Structure formats: C-alpha cells, structure tokens
Length: 274
Image 1 (cartoon, rainbow, N blue to C red):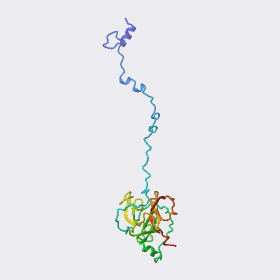
Image 2: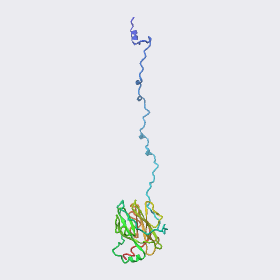
Image 3: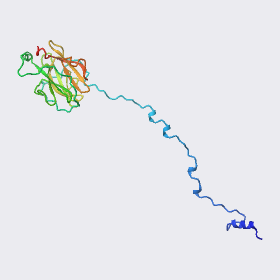
Image 4: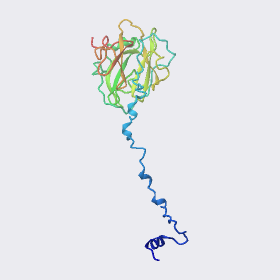
C-alpha cells in the first residue's frame, strides 16, 4: 500500500542510512563562525589625551646657566705687588690688529689730552730730566679697544683701525726707585688690551690674554705731583679703559664699570697748558 508518509520518509532517507534514523545536518565550516569582530573588544579605551603628558610632571630644572662670567676683574687695588722680574724694558711691541671687531661701539671720549706738536715744548725738558715719557692713548672703534704705549712708532698718529687720542699721562720708560712694572696683555678673541701692576692677575697669560711684556713703570702708591690712573671694564664691548680724568666716566657709565685705581702716574697738566 502506498503511504504518503513512507514517501516522505523515503525521500529524506539517505542511501546506506538505517531506516528510521534522521540524516545528519551538514556542519558549518570554519568560515561559518562569526569573526572576532562579533566579540566586544576590551575597549573602549580613553585616548592618550586622557593621560597627562610629560609636561604635567615637574622637570629637574631650572638649572642656572654658566654665565654671566666676570671679566679679568674685579681687581685688587694697586700694590705694591712684587713683580716676577727682572723684565726687559718696554717694547718694541708688535702693533695690534687689524682685528675684526663686533663694533662699532662708542668710546668713552672725546679725550681732552694734549697732542704732540712739531718741535719739543719747553715743558718737555722737565720731565725728560726725570726720565718720564708720554703714555700715548689710542682707540679702535671697530673692535672697541683702548690701547696705550710709550712707543709712538707703534701706531704713530693712528693706523690699523686705531685713532690717536693724545697723551694719557707721563710714565717711566725704565725702572726708577719706588716704581713697579705696568704689564701689558692682549686678548685677540675679544680684541682687548689690558694693563696691570699685579702680575698674579694673569701671569704669563690666562683667560685668553697673551702676555706682551712691560709697557712702562709706574708708582704703586701716591707720590707728590702724581695722579691716580683709574681703571674701567666694559663687559659688553670687552674693553679695558684707563684715564687720569675721573670726570670722563666717574663711577662708571656708558657700559663701563669702575674697577678702582690701577696705579699712580704723572698727569699731563703740570707740564702742558699751565
């Protein structure tokens, strides 16, 4: 007898399968499983902006910079200081420059000192008898350097960027009783000539300064008719300046710092312009 149920059963029966047993359903392959995107991630995580950056922590600083550095000063007053001597007399020194400078910087002048004139003035006889010589003063505005020498032939009336400013004072060319050497140094890096009676300040050369010898001889203490030679330092321009005229810079101005009395010399006014 034909039964519809048997037909339905037979239609679903697979070959080799025992009667009455349900066929196995095909299992899905690996691709049938949901990808990892179906699972919730561990997030959401806050972006990095939620965490404080390194700026939120105090740094180890601030650290002090190395500067500012003092110049060769401050310097002790003028002596008497024992020199390392004996030293040869002053000069001849090689002329300075030309040196490239940072300038131009204004000098502290104008300098009112006298200028040599053709023929020797009558007053020269007095200081020649004392073995005094002029200490000539020059200024180079390109490198802001004041230069002093007893040897007029070094720069004459001015060359190599230096202009002649006159006679700063009168000094001894050779050692006399009670005098001490005034040592001369040159720093080519900053373009500065430096003079001191204290050999221990820079010795045979230090802090970029080269020892050039003895410029002249001066008194370490006040003597009759002598005047103080005032010393100044300009750290911005890198220039040492010397004058017997306290009114030029007073206690310091124009970037120059007053460092005290370097030594004692004969001013020009007892011999000139009486």
